[in-house]
Amino acid sequence: MIPIAIDPILFSLGPLVISWHGFFSAVGLGVGMWLTARLVQGTAMTADDVYSIALAGVPGGIVGARLLYVLENAHLYANNPLGVLAINEGGISIYGAVIGGTLAGYLYARFTHRSIGLLADRAMIGMLLGQGIGRIGDIINGEHHGQNAPDLPFSVSYTHPNTLGEYGVPVHLAVGYELVYDIAFSWLLYRLLRRQPRDGVTFVAYQFIYGFGRLWVGFFRKDNIVLSLGSIDLGMAQSLGMLGMMVSVPWCIWLLRSTHAPSRAERRRTP
Image (tube, rainbow, N blue to C red; front, side, top):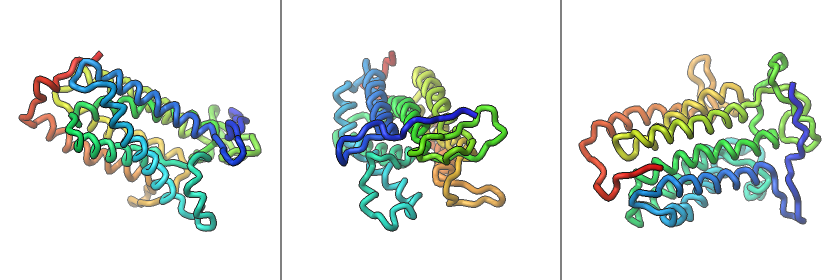
C-alpha cells in the first residue's frame, strides 16, 4: 500500500481556496492550448486563431465540467446550493469539460469561419495531454474514489486528515490509471494526425479512444450508477464513453468514404 499524505489544499488567501485539483487543471489547460497552438503551425490557422477560439472553448468547458459534476452529485448540494459555485475547491467532470468546451469552440469557430476539422484534430491531442496533467490534482486530492483493493500491491491509501479520499482505505488509483492512459494515447493521436487521410479523423479517434478509456477505468472507480446492462452497472462517464464509442465508428467510416478532400489552403504540414 502506498500512502498519500498531502493536504488537498495548495494554499488559502482569506476566502480564496486553491486546491491541487484546481492548480493542475489550470496547468493542464495551459499545456493543452500551447500544444494545440504548436500543432497548427504550417497550416491555414495560426496560434492566434487557437487562443481566440479558446476564449469561447475554455469558459464553455468550465461550465460544462461543473454542470455535469453537479448533476452526478446533486445530493452534495441539496443543503448547500451556493456550493455549486465553489469550483475552486474542486469538483468537476472532465467529460463535462470535453462536451462543453468542444461545443463552445465549435460554435465560435463556425461563427468566425475557421476550419473546424483542422483545428479539432489538433485540439484533441492537446486536450488529452492536458486531461492527463489535470489528473495529478485528482491523485493528490483523493477525488473520484477508487474501488477497495486491500490485496493490491500498488493500492494507495489517503492518510491526510483533510483528504477527499477514503481515509486509510487501500484503493485502486483509478485516476492514476487514466493519467497514464491519457498521456500515452495523446502520443498515439499525434502519430495518427501525421498520417490521416481526412480532416476530422483524429477528432473522431479521440472520441473512441477516450470513451474506451473511461469505460475501462470506470470499473476501478466508485461512481454513481446511471445505467444497468444486465449484470453490468455503469456510471455517468462510462455511459458517455460507450455512447462516444458507438457514435465514433460510423462517423469515422463516413469520413473515410467521403469524397470531400481538404482544400489546398487547408492541407496541413504537421511538425
